[in-house]
Length: 538
Image (cartoon, rainbow, N blue to C red; front, side):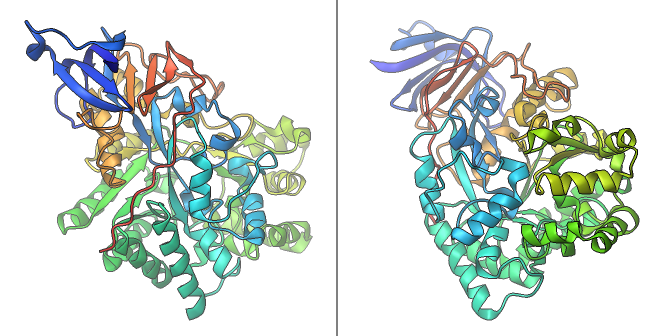
């Protein structure tokens, strides 16, 4: 007798096709049988050790978070309800060009400092890995949800070149090619970049193209956080399209937003650019989160020259009064490359987390508000925070436009990604709410997408981009990564005021056939594993 039959479910299978009613049988971590209601008439219905009545619930494939920052959270927090409760069964880590493999002792320490605002310093983590394969092995010891990994180009550059703003030597470029190839051979699914973050932003297009050629050889994809989401955003998108076309490499555009006042209402121009490339044969997908504010670190706003040399060099520049004034002028008058070429508006920069508890009063307030209360300029307040918290403050940046969000999510190559930073006292609610917010707000309440369309965006499309042939659809033989949700009540619980509230209307989540959410509560199952994609040399 099989392990489980999910009875009388409304199956939205991830293909975009209309839903149907069926019994779905699971055994040994896979879907072994789907008996549609019409076929079951007059026949004995399937039996199993456990029967789950799914009357009134939608059964869909598990949701794939195409842009996650759970690189340490999965190791730190076995519960990981932030994602499990949303129905996320697979996260893609290693985003924005900065993560924790491949590294040596030096670069590990540097990266830990550089992205403390994303993941914390990691003092509670045993960093017992250095290579991509060793990190994936660490995940395989048991995690809440499945995880795939992108090789972070900024980390690779830090390892081979350092944190200097200069071109790589031929020997250094060879070393970077080797590191990327090794990571792909060890199971990574592609390469990410953070081209507004140091040191990845110091790479010119020719260097990135050479790395993308390696990615293409192994059947992976390139996932850039490109050079600007503000001034020059369309040019930055076009740069990535041209670069990957030259390298013959698939392209996945990370958090493909059009932010800041200069881009209000310009999403159709982005989609026109992509449609033209797609029509010419380009392989392009993108992900977005269904919210308007962005989220990153306060240090990321600084001009690239201020961060050159790594975290210690940045702190030294901030400590020097004359250099600090230069930084302020770039931020407020010119528009730093770290702030996407747009002069910073301090009333849009909300502190969402700090490492030092003594600075907790700044959390939940904009830099402008705190500066006014302290009787000082916004830059004085921001500089104080960066120095006192050793570059660790994380922020929300309130610069998005709802019409752009809605326009982009309708596009046929769109997928869902939370870009969820779980660290900090008041994180972005997208970390806890992205997927139910799509289903509840944008499907049920607004009708921006049909339910079948939205589920396809969150399941089969990302699985196809990741080239995972047995995930993303409710099909016989596929892995039993499944979500049961109530389409009438599913909603994000998280808000900007209470960002860690869990969603409603998602009572059951299975990963590899095991319940990680049951009756709306997290079980003690650690059913997730590293998802390695076998390299496919072309």
